[in-house]
Amino acid sequence: MECGLYFLGTMSKEIFIFCASLLIILSLLAIPGGEPVTAQLFICSPFIFLLGIPHGAIDNVLYTRNKRVKNTEFLIVYSSIVLLNVALWFILPEIAYVLFLLISAYHFGQSQFTHHFKGQKILHQVFFMSWGLCIISALILFNLSELELIVKSYDEFAVFESVHYRPIFLSVFIVSSLITLTGLIFLRYKNVFSNDTVIIELLVLGLILFSFYLMPIIIGFTLYFVILHSLKVLNEEYRYLKKTGVIQSLTSFVKLLTPFSLISLLGLFLLFGLIHFGILKISFGYCVLIMISSITLPHVFVMDKFYHLLFTTKFYGQS
Image (cartoon, helix red, strand yellow):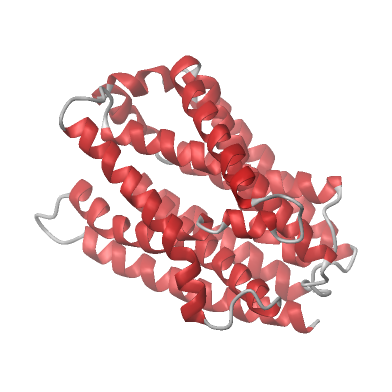
């Protein structure tokens, strides 16, 4: 119960930050003469660099914890998965894109709800996927007009025109929303969730969908990804590593995050340089999409193992 109350309090803070950020960003975008694209990049980049990227920067520490896997072996496998996914983007981009959406959906749902359960049963995993598909399909559905402009502006994105089919995303959004609502009601009926938990989760989902509907796609997603996802994951990582004695303070946690965060940023800037000088013949946006997708794939498996580790060490109590 104590753990559940902790997360309820944390989630309330995250909702407050989310709402405050929503109002501030809407005000900035309403400034006369402001350029939406410039505003999006200006607002989003620092937060993605400072919080979004670091939340996956200690995957090696989390995965090798209590495992007979050397850090070098982990990095080789991790890098191989990244490279294979990059290759998939150039061979079968539509498949790579759909795979990215699906694994992201599951990962977001798992991150949102794992702390409520003592394990990960199949019904829980279906619930994770339905919640994630609800927000991912909404993000695309509410911003199809903006995505169509991107598709028409860059040749690489043209292959996604067949994927961005409104009836499909509308159907996925409706079905996943119904499954998610049914799941919340069922979990309340089974006393897994309290009334407060259901209300909080409905509020969070409503705020996410509201921001996706009102905002340009980059800002809407960044607002969710940084505040409601990355901060939560960083909090769990920090608390677990401190509890198990890997770190002693916030300072040592930041030091642990820094090496691979810097490597990721330097790699991204290197790719941007290659694109800028015409050595790499793709757009900046397509490059970012490929890199985010390729890093997300192994990260999702690492986090799945991490959550399993939290269950086995009884890090989560009853909610």
